[in-house]
Image (cartoon, rainbow, N blue to C red; front, side):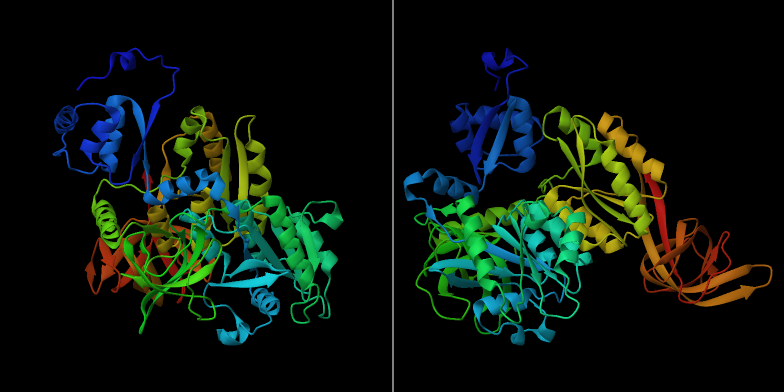
Length: 592
């Protein structure tokens, strides 16, 4: 197979031709689509090391090879994407849909109490300790217009949905207690809401309590980039008491006003499409999932696919457990009929029939098992300049974690000043403490890079970041951090020097041995310890020393390494003031 002559002579300035194919397209169907002989395409791929036939589905690496051979770009459209495009192009079928509102904020600031008051029910009493333990979705009617509320146990769930591509929320209500003010989770909630790029309505709650100071809350919000209308900004702020049901109508009116400006619409006539909000295995009902419908109308008997599970709708229930005959856009509905428990954030799509759904699931399962399957690629510093040259990146989002607030403030002041005329550095979240799961999920959703400065990087976070494709960079010297950012923006990044976590041990007894020195009798709680590995010593949450493991013994034998679950004796090269309860964390330095 040869490239067409016109393609060989194509001007380099001419954009690549884009070919869109359906999920599960075979080589035969693709060859017919681009009008080349199937056997020629198969022969070229065989020469490239593939063992394929005309009936084989195009894999990820096969797609990249074909793109290189033909100098084209291939876009694979999932069944969900195709149906979404169909829904949006049928202009005559598009109708208004109710808004979907997510309530966020710090723990115990009254998120669920607010929703409870709006619904005039008693959700809180059903929850453990008055704190939401699951994701719930509820509908209320105000002035004849329905509003769907999502009550989350934390913004992690909100962002996890987004990190999987589920743009679900239309409006965020940020609840802040008037007597408590902006707290750490409030700040994180603000960052997540901003990353979602949706309107924010601030509800300053508990104005009935002694010590309530709404103006102080507004001042604190201004330092987080939320300037309310009474302070000359554009963020709506309403003083409320969820407990006393004060000014609740104002919140509902404001939601409907914001909705009018957004012009939310959907197509109720196409096969139903939505997002899995939560799912679990019910002992009597089997796999059950709460689905928010985004397009189309869902009916009992509909066959569907969701991620790598499928099924046929056996029954539909609303949030009160009442059976439904159908569910339209923005309606939260409990669905029975899944073959397996789906994952939160997975898309839900009605298809032609159960056999068709099973074939799609089989293809997806096969693809996930292939070594060449690749997840979504996230931005790294190495890719920054290259992507900018292509016009793909104009902003570098960063998440910062540092040892103390002073370091956080310095980095927040310093890094944005490195912005150039062409690339803007945007800090979407900055806080003290170790890198958390929430940071990784936010980085996934916002395509951000995490910067850790003199702070812990737990092994489970390393694993999660690898799974999500998020880059985490750790530094102990601020000028190295700044130089890396500068060099990345200039396209001259040096080889990455990174710390790779090895293991962690707890000191349980300290021995002072004549002519030998101090030996820390320790238990390896995680990973592996190796002789000559770099080490950090933590006392509580504070790192008190950096050192090196000079000797390592198991029972009476000198060993080069010791694994999780074993006891050992550790001799450090320099540090002698080791104490019982200290944590020794080991790592190695790698260049790449």
